[in-house]
Picture 1 (cartoon, one colour):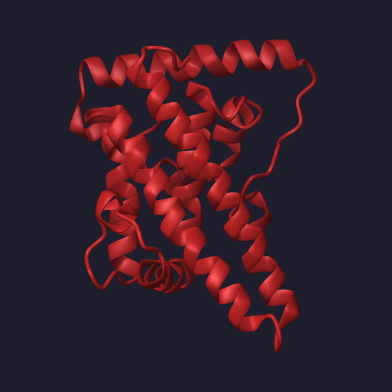
Picture 2 (cartoon, one colour):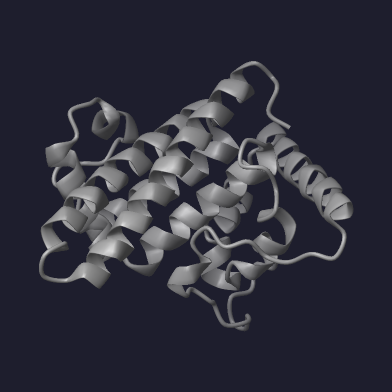
Length: 211
């Protein structure tokens, strides 16, 4: 991961990257590489959390796009270390790609969801686009230099708030803009699934069983 930001390949951020699976010729080899790289990266950075390295990891998709990460981790099981890292980077990409929509969903979800998820996620009130970008970066940063399980729990809570907002907005648009309602329903389902998987990963990490 070069420190130079003068020249890098274009960042790809189409909406369909969210929850996309990337192809691979040898699933067994891809699985081995995914687990090995995820474990090596996390162990090395967490043992000696250099702030400059952490910031480069947090900014990785901004500088290099998602394809390099996808090639490593996108085919991993949801409840695995590389699977958790892949979902956190995708969540970050979704927020960075369209922070205005993310803020709209978050504020709607905050008002509708009767739970502590908003508090657990840690967003300010109100949470505008800039605040949500900062929040998701903070959560990702926590994977490398904080309590890993807490970072996953915060990400899961964030997903639940976003899913609630997407679901309720989908209901609003059902009668007038069915295509938009369908897209929001799909996003709500994916976010809800991510929330369940990230919560499970947090529990596995606490039992030293997330590999």
